[in-house]
Every structure is written in C-alpha cells, then in structure tokens.
Length: 69
Image 1 (spheres, helix red, strand yellow):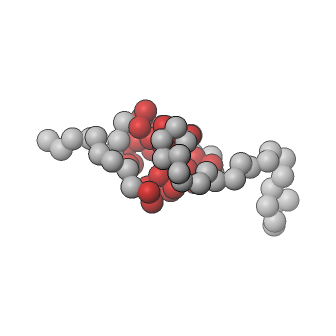
Image 2 (tube, helix red, strand yellow):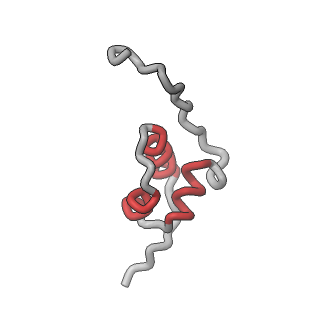
Image 3 (tube, helix red, strand yellow):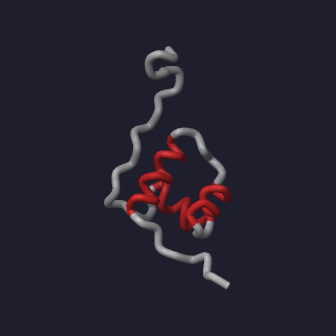
C-alpha cells in the first residue's frame, strides 16, 4: 500500500492556494486531491509552511470583477 504522506511541490501549493482563494473550502477534498493529510494541505494553503511562496490576493467582498459587477 502506498503511503499518503508525500511532499507537496511548489506548483501544487500555488494551485491549492488559488483553489482556496476561489472558494474551495473543503480541506478533505483538497487533501485527497494532493495525496496529503488535511493538516498538511491546510498549513500549506494558509501559509504556515511554504512561506517563501506568494499568497493569492484576498478578494474584497461586494466587489466583483468585470463583467459580473
């Protein structure tokens, strides 16, 4: 049986951060998609680990990008 623990790549962390920023909030789904524990993906997405990587900009509620505004 293959171990679920593995190191995330830079690309995976950036992709997961973008998914989270776009509204995907299920840690269980993200962790399954990347083959890591919930704590591992959460730490990477919120910036507790991979601190050297950029975080996506925070969306301002009530402001929608064109053409939806």
